[in-house]
Structure formats: C-alpha cells, structure tokens
Amino acid sequence: MRSRIAGGAAACGAALCLLAPAPAPAAIVPQQSIRGVALGMDVAAVRAELGSPDRFRFVRHEILGRVREWRYGLTRVTFNSTRLDAQVIAVETRSRKERTARGVGVGSRRETVRRRVPGVRCLVEFSYDHCFVGAWRPGQVVTDFAIDRRGRVSRVVLGRVID
Image (spheres, rainbow, N blue to C red):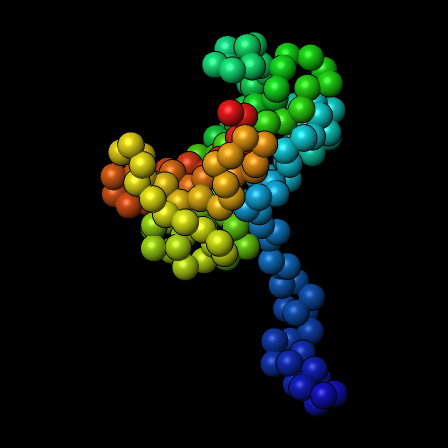
C-alpha cells in the first residue's frame, strides 16, 4: 500500500499533486438542490447561499397569487409568496455550467440523462418531451429535465408539485 501512494506522488510530482484542483461539487442534485438552493429554504437562506440576486421581481403565479422570483444569471428561484419568510418552491436553470455529479445538465442528450440519472423516466406528454425523477402528485418533489426538438436538455427544474 505504501509503495502505491509513494509511487503515485512521485508520478505526478509533489508540487503538481498539491495544485491539482478538487472535483467541483455537483450544482444539480436531483430531488435535493440546484446551486445549493433546496426547496423550503427561506429568503435569508437563499441570500446567504447565493448572495444578492442579479434581478428580482414579483410575478403572478397561477395558483399561489403574487410570488417572489429571484434570478442569478440563468438560474431562477421562485418563492411561495412575496413575504420575507417566503420559502423556495422551485429552482430552474438554463445554464450549461450547472451539472449533476455525473455530468448531466443543459445540453446533455436525452440518452445521457437516461443512463446517468438514477430513477429517471423519460416521456412525451401532450407534446412536452421530458425526463424526470419523482412523482407528479400534490406535495411530491420532482426534478424535471426538459428536452428540446434536438433531443437535448434545455432546462432543469426542481420543484414541489402544488396541485
């Protein structure tokens, strides 16, 4: 065992081994978070995780009424109300930078999503092509990979099913 460790260090050179970057943490964790933002986090927790949003606005949600929406580049965080104690109900990204631990994200092929995301199902429903993890039932969490006409992921959404 000792010779393997020593051999490995000698093979890359001590200085190079120390400078090698650690693998980046996954920005998309299906059923848990996107960019470190999880469902149920409040406004203060999101600000602590990502800082001040690039843009913010209050929008009309078809079920909840007026809600708070924050944007961080190509990532959007939606809260369940406009209040300061509002909680995250959805996180969406269109950024190619955000990836799962196995490299799946915007731009990935449908087949790659199928192979690399555990428990995923891929369907075309009402002309909406997508792969998802979770159940489309009220109260359940779903991670949805929208597939465009070219067969590639166009956005990833983590959200709680409301109705």
